[in-house]
Image 1: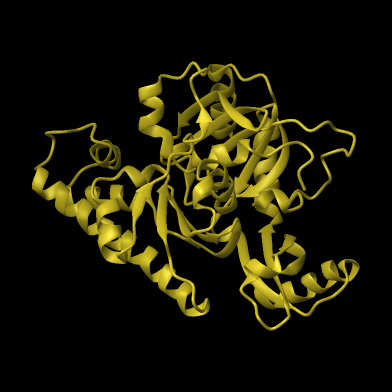
Image 2 (image 1 turned 90 degrees about the horizontal axis):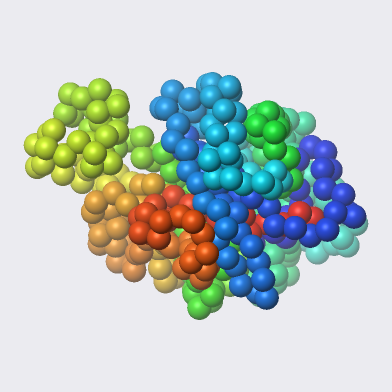
Length: 368
């Protein structure tokens, strides 16, 4: 889990004297902002707050913030409406601004490792090394899959301008950013808590957002392979808009089922089915690529989350395409939600959208 990673912020915000405290998970997505606040007691997690604030399509486009003021206002409104008092948050990044790469290095003392990782990073990162923050984690020998005696290291590089952008948005809303995570690893944290019996399986965690799809293949609590794909829910909206002659807003409503009867069902089904095929093919190609680079590693299941996970027919098409069990993730599966003031039926309906926020809410002040 990424809780073993260091802070990706440029400055050391967390004091060593700060008591360990749960953070509010704040997921700033292209189509909506989500927050989750959890309470931990005796090894069990309880949902205290969950909230979601939709964003207009032009506010964040393909992960790029176009209207900072609207994002800041939406964050403020979300905290006020959810009545969240804790101002310390964990946020995350994904897409083209972050690179996650598994590299191999010869065994070496810990004091030499950071310098060697930085040297190796220059070979793998398509950015100026001075424009990124670098973090890394050494994989356990029994989980790394390496048989050559070399160390396997997960390298993470995030663009400083993206980190600074997120930091300023959060601070502008009157909050204190404490931890910077990566979407794919936040999903991994969510999986570790909610699927304890599946930790020894090889699982593809697929987070289907509005503009980016994260694929993280894990086994034994270790990430074996990650990839971000610039494809998501917006592709459905664009296809409906194009094929059915609707405005973007009308297409978005149609995708969500809010304009039933406004278009011929057969035509809509055909458009959805076509994009489902595109999404399923991208996921399958990613898994096939992983299999070619990881000898003797099969895939036991695919777990999908994010808003697109609820699209009609996607899970079935993905299962047929990959011949592997596919299911929609429940980020509250092992979290007690009975004490929250959120309607339980509504919570179950939109749960897949909360997966990143839940993973972030599992982080604590003082995490590396």
